[in-house]
Image 1 (cartoon, rainbow, N blue to C red):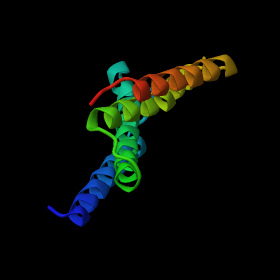
Image 2 (image 1 turned 120 degrees about the horizontal axis):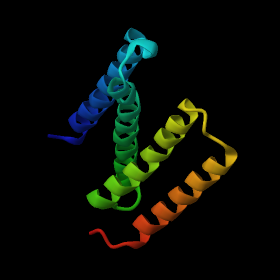
Image 3 (image 1 turned 90 degrees about the vertical axis):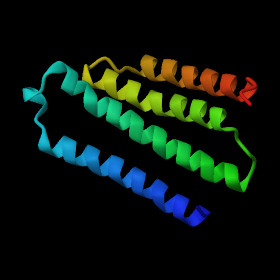
Image 4 (image 1 turned 135 degrees about the horizontal axis):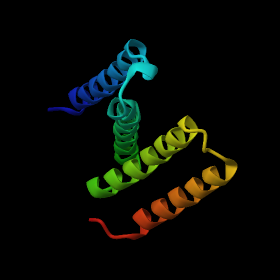
Length: 120
């Protein structure tokens, strides 16, 4: 496969993920869902962010400096987990500025750690 078709497939994956999330959110009522089904949107948002960030890192990696697959995966997971954690805390009314600062510190430490560890 050439690079153009890979980019189209990647864009299609992202569009399907976000489209499915939008349809799920519009077609369900959170007050009528059971607890396990209430967690699905958070997991889905995390997956959407993970795929999007990984694609952006792949695009950046192709233009500038090569980033290994493991490193891209680690960075994408770290960057996708923070907004999901903030959404979870916000949904239960527990998000404060202290939590945001703690999460910012954790992402800084996680990104630094992933940048320094040899994941070849």
